[in-house]
Image 1 (cartoon, each protein chain N blue to C red):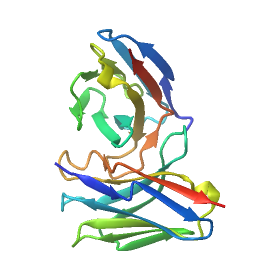
Image 2 (cartoon, each protein chain N blue to C red; image 1 turned 30 degrees about the vertical axis):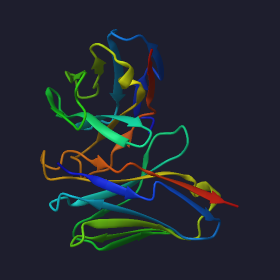
Image 3 (cartoon, helix red, strand yellow; image 1 turned 30 degrees about the horizontal axis):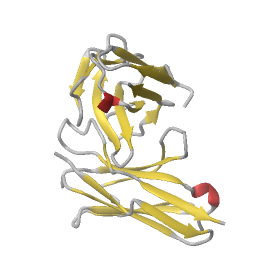
Amino acid sequence: GENVEQHPSTLSVQEGDSAVIKCTYSDSASNYFPWYKQELGKRPQLIIDIRSNVGEKKDQRIAVTLNKTAKHFSLHITETQPEDSAVYFCAASPLSGGYNKLIFGAGTRLAVHP
Amino acid sequence: DAGITQSPRYKITETGRQVTLMCHQTWSHSYMFWYRQDLGHGLRLIYYSAAADITDKGEVPDGYVVSRSKTENFPLTLESATRSQTSVYFCASSELAGRDTQYFGPGTRLTVL
């Protein structure tokens, strides 16, 4: 079945720096790759997603890139702020089950220090 | 987010007891999901449902039972709770299939003693 690996597990940056989180997936038929942010004690919330017919997508300070050949995708956060501190999860939607489900990575805990 | 709720928010039970976690959504979304969240494992799918009376297993279904008699409700039952089922459980819903935004409930923290 689909497997999603996420790195690093923890990331510490200074305010204003950039942060990059990388994920790899195993099912080459996967075609939807969302990113969720989970603040401490809160529920996960979608922040950005990308589909397999697009290589890059941006939304203000957040961008996601997708390399289907290498089966990896990345989240880029520029000009980080303390409120970006959270756990970030990547996910992939495998073909099995008719794209009905998401398989999540283990998460990256991002700490942005003032 | 207020459209999907979970109850109870916190539950302590003992090994061997049956526990049911409730999930209710007001959007009439077709798809609903149950995940468990454990440190180091992220979010793992337990069961999902594509519509009323249609359910299927996820990555970690053993020890859990689901039903979906109405579109808006998707209860998760632990038939005989074990300590390994201590976790935070999240319910989610989406209008379309997995290739669509999933909206998560607030979660239920379950402790099995």
